[in-house]
Every structure is written in structure tokens, then in C-alpha cells.
Image (cartoon, rainbow over all chains, first blue to last red; front, side):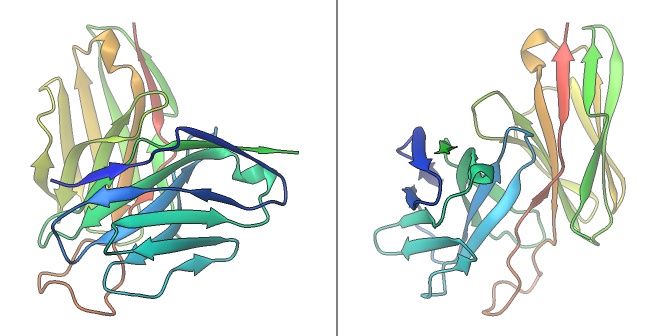
Length: 117
Length: 122
């Protein structure tokens, strides 16, 4: 079974600054996907970024980037130029593809990020 | 269109009521999911449908009954719920994997979530 750990329950950052959210996972699988989801107070879960384990290059999406360390089983999210709208709960998630079946996401416990003006 | 819709947005029901939650997607996704989320906690998987067939049931009590009438629609029928079942119920969908297995260059299978139904059981 996979486990995902987010060691920072809460974090805060000043607007326009950079913040890094940590995530570690445990698995014996070699092929898997990792995701960061954002859940603002409106409660809609929004995909922020994804990383395929077979890709060595770290994923980036505008102000969001990851530091994927496969050997260390680490998958941190960096948010640059933080904006007030980034205030949300952030969930790290692991997924192993299952064939002819849906895919199960294993979520970390979440990090609540507050961006301060 | 990457939208998953859920109705109703809010639902209050008594323990003897029967109600249903509805989820719809028109992205051609072949896998659909129900999650339960308590406040300040991550979503917990309840059911997975793949190609309109139930593929995963995470030991959910029988008072929750899922149904997938077609590839775009997913229902969750509720009966004789308990107050502790009060939560946000999230629906999600994803493309679903190929039967051939993983290959470099295949699209990632992220799940798209709906806005949820806030359920209160009184």
C-alpha cells in the first residue's frame, strides 16, 4: 500500500514571495503519477500540477513547479510570486495506474496555505 | 470542457429519508469516482466505476448505493444515513487507463473533480 505524508499542516507566506510545500511518499512501484491539488475555501478541488514518475524533468505550470526526487520519494511544490488567490488547502496525491479499472488516488493529509497581503 | 457537475449543492436530510446525489461529465471519461470528505481532511475514496461497472468499493456501508446509468452519469443513493455521514461528497472523473498498460507518452490520468454536495444528516 502507498502512503503520502505532508509534514506541514499549515504554512503562511507574504504576497509576492516564494513558498515550498513538502510531500513524501512510500511505494514499491516503479510506474506511477504524482499530483498536487488545490482546494480553496469554495471547496472545489483543482489540479495544480502533475508529474509522471518515468520523467526525470520536473514539471512546471506557470508559477507552480515541483522538485521530484524519485530516489528520495520526495515531491515538493514551489509557488513563486504568491498571490492572495493561492490561499487554499493543498493536497499531494499518488496514483498507480490500474488497467481496466479506475485509478485510485492516495492523498496526503494536506497543507493549509495562507497568503498574507 | 473539463467540467464535472454535481447536484444538489447542499442537501439536508433526516435519518429516515431517501435521497440521491447526481454527478455528470461530458468529457468522454470512462472512470468515475465518489469521495467523502470531512472538514480539514483529505477526500476518502468510496466507489470507483470503470466503463460503467463498479470496480472498487472501499467497504462502504450499504446505506450508500452507487449507480452508473451511463458513461456520463453517476448517482449516489442515500438511505437511512447517520449524523456522522454528514460531509462533503465529491464526484470525480478521469480518462481511465488503456488496457495495454503504461507507455511513455500516454496522457496522465488525472481526476477532475466536481464542486461537491454538502450533505447534512439531522
